[in-house]
Amino acid sequence: MTFADRLRAHEGEAMCPHRLVLEHVTSRWGVLVLIALLERSYRFSELRREIGKVTEKMLTQTLQTLERDGFVHRDAKPVIPPRVDYSLTDLGREAAEQVRGLALWTEQRMAAVQQAREEYDAAKA
Image (cartoon, rainbow, N blue to C red; front, side):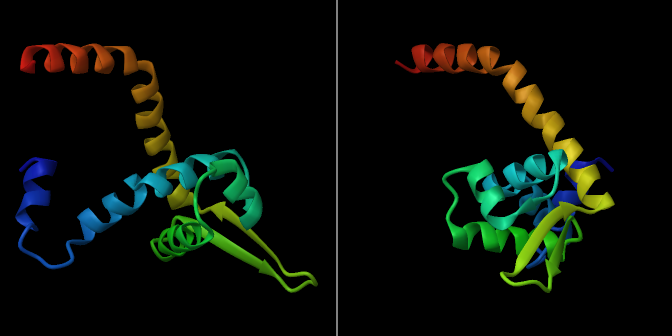
């Protein structure tokens, strides 16, 4: 049974765990958070600036989801003002390296994708 077959086998289930995790790590903000945290740990505001164009609410939700899945570690230091640092767990580093590989491949193959799009659009016109 292929991976796609295993995913399809869970289609009828309300909350397929495989699909949820895949959705979390490949979401728009999940990808950017994981890739940024590969470089170093960040404070919330630093991470928000690094990623850009993400709302505070969306970044908070993304970090909480990735923390719940075991990919992100949240380190709250009891100081004034409060300081919270985010970093990757070992599991998160594994996931982030996979996502970064896909992101790099996309960047390298963008010309081929653009050409395919143009050919498709020309054929449809």
